[in-house]
Length: 248
Image (cartoon, rainbow, N blue to C red; front, side, top):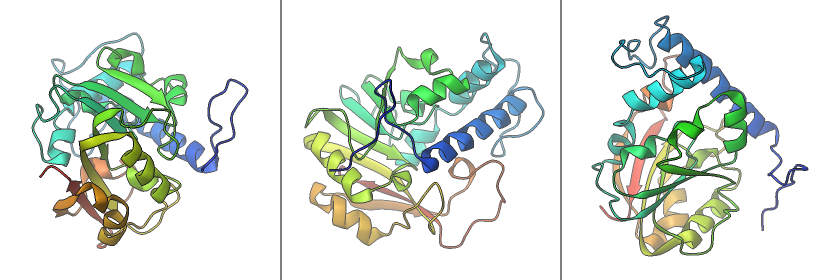
């Protein structure tokens, strides 16, 4: 079983890859602050109007809350479902990040799992603004701190390729998902990178999730939030965003 070294406070110790990912998110927060101030576009989106802006105690919190508010269509669109798709269910968002866009899904209980949860708060991301809808849990996809069959549904949006051990993460998702539970994932296919080490294929996904009845329901070239706002706009022709589901 994958084991993680822990800090003195008992939290998982982050390796160089996860610290680099935290730096990526912190850079993105600076971009969003500039966007909030009207100094730049964000993924092609113009700066927020005065009516769209949410004002909080810090500029980082204001930018973060506004980012979520104007982006609530992203998860439903990414997963090809309506906002009511998980009504009445307990939902796990694997690799939720600091912007809990899963709150777009209505009438469900949401758990967001991410190894950087505590570090996001230290960096200024306003996680506390969303705790009325999301319970944030610090942990790794390969070693989830949940009992078996805890969730009616599991989602992952452009995150499963970031894990350290894809096979172990798939095993854990299978373990915590209830029998006949719903699994929907948007999986980013691309050449290996520092923060995204897996060059995933259809065969990889089917080998580890096929027993759950998962099927490919869409495939498209990535743009916008799939990419770093500070990166080149050029897309590798091998890249794809592929949606898999067992309830299509």
